Image (tube, rainbow, N blue to C red):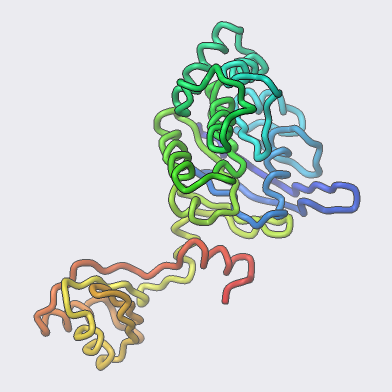
Length: 308
């Protein structure tokens, strides 16, 4: 794909007197994109606008197509896993996924073949003929993922895919999501309020707050926005306290964070050469050195203005 995945210009959405989205402008690309924000930030509303499911103000393009005029074409190329349960009572997983395939325009035979393949990928091949009503929360989430995959989309919208899952099911779902771009050849927008999920699987992030986009970029940019070449994490083979004392005497600020690691703020105009020189002089072995970065959580709180 050469076009930008998603382009937004002046996107707005109002429900009665409630403004859900306010003048959203963004160009969004990536392999697995975390759409972040607290509940009520406008994430689900944005996804529905992009799919052409609800009217909105401004413009939105998905895979080069206008969501205002080409919603059906977008839905042919995009898979959608909604946050809420989305199946008819009494349906089996095969019936639901086949129906989803037919809705996307596939002939019934092909839709059924793809339904079996998608359910196998989602790990439900042994339960595929059972009614979804009796599924566990984790199994229902897998069915929603399978129906989103059945028509072989170029782009997936996953809305809170790990919501309500126990730790093991959450881990399995995140593993499936991580493999999707390579195994299925699609990009992913992962909408979630769970920051550890984004830190684990995403390479890009979009942060929403109060109906506005506050950040668009790579996860490394989000985590490294405060980082400077003088703010380091230094890993040593042994004796971190000894190296910290030497660096403090040379004007640095140091905190020993583990038996092998030191957080270092170098003095003005100093470089990593200072660290290596003092370590060599004391006979200490440096095993690793990198610019110190924030966690995704710290970057998120800074972006939305709630950093401590």
